[in-house]
Image 1 (spheres, rainbow, N blue to C red):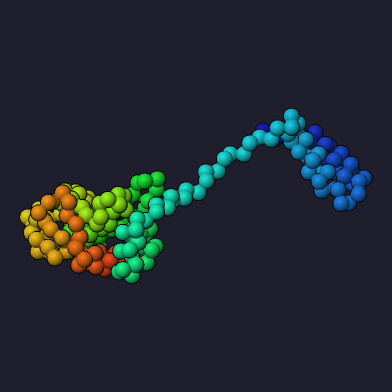
Image 2: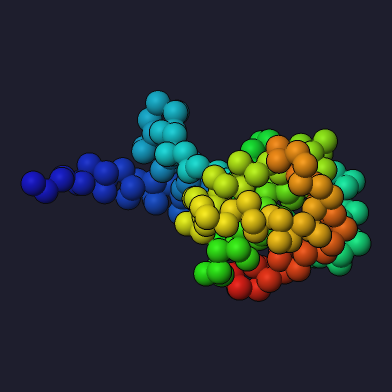
Length: 190
């Protein structure tokens, strides 16, 4: 079904004739104004479909402990954004664990979990619970049921203490290992 534009064509020809009769400097504006009145005779423009705004990540301010860690171990500030997505007080990991050796993967998860917890709550200074790590290892499919506890004991130098499994804090060696892990994962992910 063809639309009849003959009436519109007549109106446009009239507008062109009017515009040609006025000084050149005003022709374009006059044409736009008159065309707008044909297209929107009520004076109301039809509101264009709203385009969703680009989603911007809310920058979570890093605690002094995290900033000190980054500085002390010369980790680039943008490393946090490469490993974690942070928005409105929430945090999600972006990284993947590439190693197939479950004991190494478990330590990487534990170290990154300590950082994630510190980002979320500065009072949890580079600490994690073994259950958080267990669940994340299950999620990453690197959980080693038979050796889970032994893996922590074998690398006990990375932690201040393993006495309280709900509050395992990183030692200085653990923080150095965290920095190395962060750089390694970022390089693996490109």
